[in-house]
Length: 122
Image 1 (tube, rainbow, N blue to C red):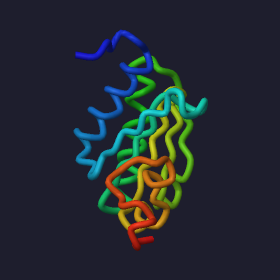
Image 2: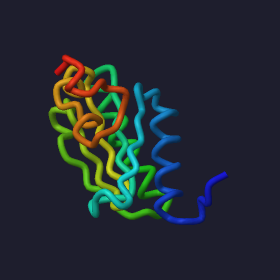
Image 3: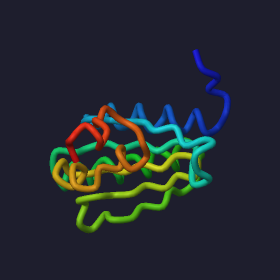
Image 4: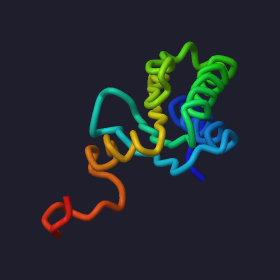
């Protein structure tokens, strides 16, 4: 079992657990340590509707605060097509399905099951 005494790892587990409780779909965790200085983990997840995306974002920000990790910055809440929650060591992107497909963050970070561009698919 990984060492969850590190605050970034505890925050990461908290976020994954909360998203699972809120029935987020297609949760992907991308390790950023050593790749980027913006965070240690990036989590990408999908909600079924703008209402679910907004609800998940609000609940997650509140839970992060309640657990003592401070105030997370939340961007994109009014439209809730793509909501970014910046909790410091963990950055969370919540999308509606069509918006997630369009931006395809997993591919940008070189992560996921996408086929390489050389295989004839773009």
